[in-house]
Image (cartoon, rainbow, N blue to C red):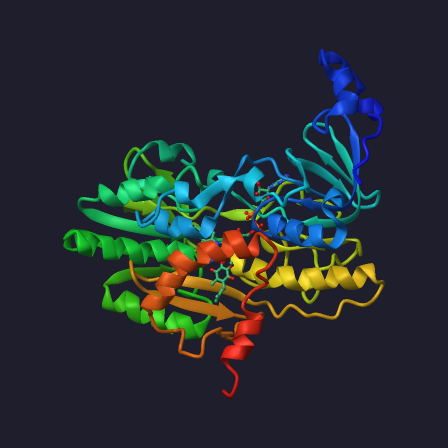
Length: 443
Ligand code: FAD
Ligand code: UQ1
């Protein structure tokens, strides 16, 4: 049960300077107060809401709280299609209030500090929350500012990014207004979420320009920091065939370091020849920003040397603090960061917590399952699914490395329902059980 306690002295002055501050002391969780929950979840994105729903069933709603500052919750995977004009931005968002599991406490603020030695979390508006168990689901941060000329360059047209709610519609705007020249797509020199998304929008751009009779006026270029087009060979082979067939240029080890939006120029650094740069003029630029762990985790007692939450790769329990768990993009799990991975992780973490509550050893093992529906046109998808070892782990008993219409339908029309009504309600734990059924009788 949540308990409001007395303010700690450091917050006293702040409380007094607020004319109704003293009243707030005992009435609002958003003023200077202390609260306690049996299960505290940090972050109310895909992973946080999912685990909130699951933990409500385990602990009872009143014993669970989720800390999340945003009024809106977005289904980010659909932004690939929003940037290409195939879905609206409105369709991707719902209010956070509407996805919060009913009865679970929504602490509407940002986590500022986590002190796992005292089981305490401090928020930006001065609330101290203590917990018995903690799930960290803080996602990752976008760093447009690490590219010179951004984010201010987004004030110009011709440039967009499907990675942010603020910039995704700019991609569609640039695509519609394309006349003649280079359409350039970048991939940064950092871990990213949904590593296929930077090139999905290239395939959609190519398809849109063909459909509208402008493809002959365009040079389509994918400049990626990576040494490969896609990390898993089975799917990379298909993608290489597609880029050849559709005359898409791929330049490996090229990292976007500057955007001169007023001149429509993008500067890329050759990562194999430090200091060597090349300037590309563009008619359309899609930026995938550098990404990294959230500020609150970097340098904290919970993170590894790179700033990601340091969890056991099999059971998602923190390596040093046994009452702390992690899920999703904020973790150092050595697999691709996706919503599909969150789904599979959620069922493992649920089981791990059940075992920890019984003082037993966690037994269910996360295999690293992740998935990337590689949208290759307005009606085809290559459904990549793989594990920690980079081995394909396909749900359907067909060759998923082929472009398929049915998979596009799944991505565009089925997956959003599975997300809002399955994953976020804590019922969808990834396709593992269905994969086993669908492969019954097969080798
Ligand atoms: P998020 O959902 O990002 O949630 C993190 C939450 O933490 C946010 O709500 C944030 O407000 C909150 N937060 C951050 N800092 C604080 C703080 N200090 N205090 C409190 N709260 C905080 N995945 C797929 O499976 N398939 C796809 O096809 C796919 N396509 C994608 C396409 C695009 C363009 C993008 C952007 C993503 C795509 N993804 C896809 C990835 C997927 O959306 C993420 O992997 C997933 O949302 C991760 O969930 P998460 O909860 O870890 O992070
Ligand atoms: C998935 O479970 C999931 O989370 C709900 C996604 O994210 C939005 C996905 O993109 C995919 C592909 C899966 C995996 C589901 C199936 C049915 C293969």
